[in-house]
Length: 102
Image (cartoon, rainbow, N blue to C red):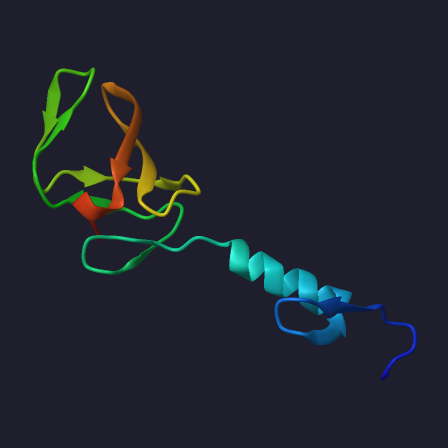
């Protein structure tokens, strides 16, 4: 094996021997969840989004109108939910299918 000072481990998923660093990088990449908006754009923390339809906010007695801009979103680890801040509404979580990236 090249580089006797490197630790190699057997990856059961691929059936290959690889360095421990390569295996941990591969597993970290597999753990990342991609969150996509209504038209398929990839969302990331800090992005701005626009609502594509009117949404009634449960518990707030308020309706967010189509075209409302939400600034600085945060991903939650769920492929369809994003955490948002909006004046007058605490703990706002929106589904990615109702927003479009700006």
